[in-house]
Length: 385
Image (cartoon, rainbow, N blue to C red; front, side):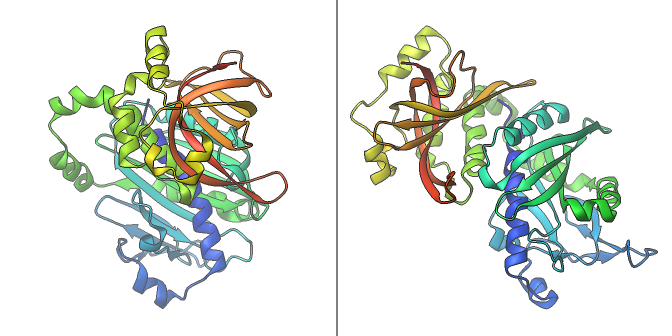
């Protein structure tokens, strides 16, 4: 599994949060300058018309231009360590604020930008992000120099009903991976936003300092290689869980360690590994126990029997099949399973048995306009009853 693709998955939720928060509570330029903590002061770019005037965001890791009228987002309040810089339009009249952000993290994957983009599209189209991203449609993907690429898509921001165009410049360089993500309402994109997106993409540069700093801080290569097979799935899920569950999602150390030490079971694809997974199940644990207090069960293999309400599966290039499914048990409790494998002939309305590790309890919008809670499981095995 390529943990780097999760940066993109996390990113789109951040875009939504960025737009919503900036619209709900605007700050003056003075207030924003006091609260911005990790971004260096922007520099006006000379020789620009009023309509096209840009400023430069410059950190020790990268630089890029953005509309000069946009204001810095308070990264401390955003509380997303992967986000290295973020700016948003404070003057928009729409319910969604046009914005840009950059995520960055160590890149331990050899996945291409195209493979990462394909994985991202699969996640968006799966409906896994609920109202945050609805009816996502890929517009284009273009390869760029040095194994980078630009993915452009359009979706409906469910809470506001606004059509949003998002451009994601994926730079899976070594040793760091960065993603410049730019979101405009469809109206803004068609009225000059498209040209500004191109400017921002063309201007994005990664500094040599970022590469040097990461290399000097990197762990011993032989030790990393020895543990990479075991840790990859745990790292992948540790990033995917908060991306999927939003504010409710964070993988505990107990769950991370359990998955890392049982990496051959996620997924369990051989008869031997399936039998091993089933032997680890604690049959005394039910959804009622988990909803009461999930903490004691974060490193326990549990079994869920129920009806498939919804299932989405995609075959992701260079990664393989990944499925996300919603199962309702006999207690009318919701379970969402993430399974890094093919689910065969399992379809909606089928009765299934799945084994997995409960990771978090999260909230999601239901079809009646309200909110329900569900258990998010990292699934080891799933089969028809």
